[in-house]
Length: 137
Image: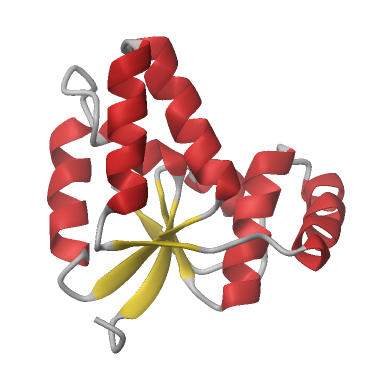
C-alpha cells in the first residue's frame, strides 16, 4: 500500500460516486475503482466537509453520516491535515486566481503535497499554475 502514488480527490468525485441519479455516477465509480489499484486517494478537511454537506442536502442525516464515515474509514483513502502555511498560500491563490477559497485550499494542499488532483472542476483548477490535474472526463 505504501508504494502507491498519492492523489487528492476533490469532493465532487465522491459526491458523484454516491448519488446514483447523477449522470457522472457511473464514470466516477469506475474511475475510483481503477485508481485505487495504483493510487492512495487523499482527502482533507475541506473535501470531507463539502462531501458531507452535499450528501446531507441530497440524502438523509443518517445516510450522509454513514457515507461520509465510509469514505473516512476506507483503507483506500488517507487523510491529510491542512497546515496553516497552506491556508496562507491558498488565501493568496484564491485572491490572485479569482477562485473560491475551498478550491484554493484543495489546490494548494495538492501543490504542497506534490500530488495530482482528481476532479471534475477543471474550469477553476485550470487557472492554477503548477497544479497537476486528472480530469473525470
